[in-house]
Structure formats: C-alpha cells, structure tokens
Image: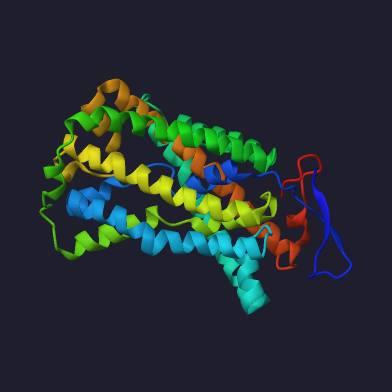
Length: 333
C-alpha cells in the first residue's frame, strides 16, 4: 500500500507516496535497461573504428564515464531517497527555477526517447513477418505500449520483477553466442585496422556510440522513493550493473568479430547475423528475439523512471496538482 508522509516543502500537509517495493535485484534489472538493454547498437563502433579501438573503448569508458555517474546516482539517491531523482537534486542545490528547468526539459526529452522502443519492437518483429503492413506495424506498436503501460500501472515491483526476467532473456542468447564462439576465437583479428582508422568520422562515431551506450545512470535515481533501504541498495546495485554492462558489451564483441570480419557490415542490427554465422539460423533468430525483449525492457524501465519526473514536479507545485495523484489501488503515479 502507499504510505502517508509529510513533505517539508508543504509544511503540515500530509501526502501519499508510492510504497517502497524495489529491492537489490529489481533495481539491478531496472538500471540495466536504463543504461544498456544488451549489446544491441554497439555494432556501429566496430564498423567505424575496427575491433581494437571498439574493445579498448568498451574497457576504458565505464571507468571514466559510467562508474562516476553510477556512484553519483547512488550517493545523491542515498542522501535524498525520493522519487524524481535529478529534479529533486537540482532543486535542492540550485532552487526551484533550475529544478523546474531540469525536470521540464528531461520530461520533454523522454517523449522522443520512449517513443523509439515500440517502433524498435515492431521493427525486430519484421524479422519473422517481413510483409507487415503499415497498419499492422502501428497496431503492434500500440499493443506493446498498452501491455507495458499496464505493467507500470500495477506498480514498480511488477516492473522490477519483469526487468530481471527481461535481463535474463536478453543476456541468454548473447551468452550462447559467446560460448559457441570461444572455440573459434581469433585474438589476432582484434588488431586488424578499419579503413577509416584515424579519420574524424571514426572518432565521432566511436565516442558517440560508446557514451550513449554507457549513459542513463541518473534515470535509475528517479524511483528512489520506491527502493527498500536505498542507502544499502543503490551503491551495491550501481556497481553490479557497471560490471554486468561491461561484460555484456565486451564478450559478444570480442567473440563476434572473429566470425564477422567485414567491418563494413557492422551496423546497428548486425548481431543476429553474427550469431547466425557462429551458431546457425536458430541462434540468429534467438538473438533477434532478444531484440524484441530488449525493446520491451527498455520501454518499461524508462516509462517507470520518466513518469516519476512530472509526479515529483507536481508534488513541488512546479506542474498541475493532478499529476501528483496516485492510483487508488496500486499507488502508482
């Protein structure tokens, strides 16, 4: 059930907040999809820079980019364990004006970002149904949105449980690809150069792909008011996800480049073809199916976290009060 608390911003006012139902495992699953969702999308880094630079970036970037952001999220959410994350942090540090700016622009950004994943889901489904019409395509998108929205309405604990399940389903085909590909591993391939090596477009593509695929940690702080024992749960979960994402990126690329050595083919969506070269059509289809699950997990986790932004802003009278209402049964914004 939702809990009643007194907000310092509204002296004497008693408001109802969502319950704290997320534990360590659930927070790991949610954060995994806030940040990664699997190695899908890393292919462009290999295509632009070749395996050596891509693997080096995969190894270096998390320590100079991801870990500081993950620890920042853990520290700030531990200090201020409330829903809203960066809205609360910025307001506390710089005042209501900048808190509103942070929340408003982040919320608007989520409209475009979250809209990608139903489309991605429908695109992956075309792997099996290439003759899908435009009407069928959008019906698939709307169905996916409805299903994920229902999961979110039922509460953060349902999203947390499903995120853990989705994480296992996404990582399983990559793990199979790695296990089947290790006997055919060719470390010498890692040092083959791409034709664009040293050119400006190489660095711009490599850095943009890596920074994008290692970002999103601050989103995990948006559900801080629904995490059990945040002072213990957040630091452990953030460090665990840094390690999981690192391995989820490093191993498939290290093994995959031995099978697919034509770097010009390494574009977004190429991993199923690499898996097919390693383990046959079945493994390729399994990896493509993992893309479906990844799109659903990304949408679900980001819908959970982004919906807490207008809720937190409404709680602080930055947006209309109805946006602070909770579901009468499930206690969700």
